Image 1 (spheres, helix red, strand yellow):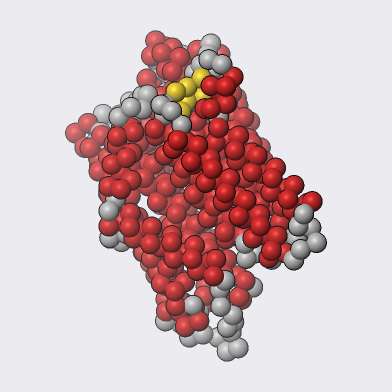
Image 2 (cartoon, rainbow, N blue to C red; image 1 turned 90 degrees about the vertical axis):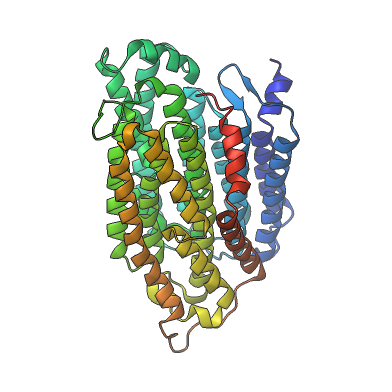
Length: 495
């Protein structure tokens, strides 16, 4: 394969990287003397243009291909990359109304550099490329979390995020190095072939490699007990940064985790069925899934800050999403992608509403949402859609996302052996409805405070949140718009 072919495969990453440099150059050279809203609007336009060009490149490129077991460009990968690019645009539009920084170009360019890492991560099929893309994403997100220099909580959030991230990177690298030592390869298909010969019982180092790799990725997706960074990071970091961490980063991390486990470690999956247990990564992730659902939902009940509540909600949703991996088949993978993409759209919209409330009231406590329906009826209605979708209420996208996950893991296990985990997930979904309704109670029932904020949200926020709410309703009423394409793409996925 020539370098031109490699450039074609890496076209989306190249376009987004060029857009990051263009945002920085335009802001520094042409827009430095302009007021901040105009600089943010210009940077957001370039960001959206770059993401649209990257998506257009994928839609207009030739047939799927790959590069020597390092990089792959199949239909499923393109769909996930487009999802990440859409979520990047959402985070950028949310940032247009921010007032926490004067460095518009630097902030938006870091968002794009994080996106380069996410998009590269989605297409990687080599351990070294996965680790490099993971660290490019992580380093950009660490800086984005610390970007509000006026708030000490932002520095605290970034410090905790960075310290836990550094530790998880060490676990990940050590686990992947053990995999390389056992198999002599960094390519996932070749690793799968070697692991089929080794087996879980023949070499205890394989168990250590598996556990360390799960620990490293457990941090990235905020699974219990590797979740400690998430509540403080979500609460302290700037809201647009949190929107990107909670949406695009989750989509990319879950997809690469699925590729790593299903493609690379498929031979040592094991079983978590209650009547047919065998060691492997499936029972390990089953325990993490159960713990995440229970702790995330129970801890969210006691929260008084909406950003912190959404952080514990994200931990619970990590538990739900892991169910798609436990199915270990095409139906599970397609349900995982559908769930993470729809969850990303929903949580990005929720943080968009939080951003508006923060701008108007200066905080994100439950009390700050009191009376929002009187001054922002459209945004309140959108927030109701987002909260009910996160709770899994039909006919919204969150309901069908959970439905596909639950049916995939129940049907994928022998003799419905994973049904215990499905029952737990359904019960925890019912629990989650309580704290989502707490937010809606403040919006629609609680009286507005005396002398409260009367300012209207910007047009960009109303258009974005309206579009996201419409998307959540549309994917709930017609889920086959995305599920059908995912099932067709998964059929050609290299297991």
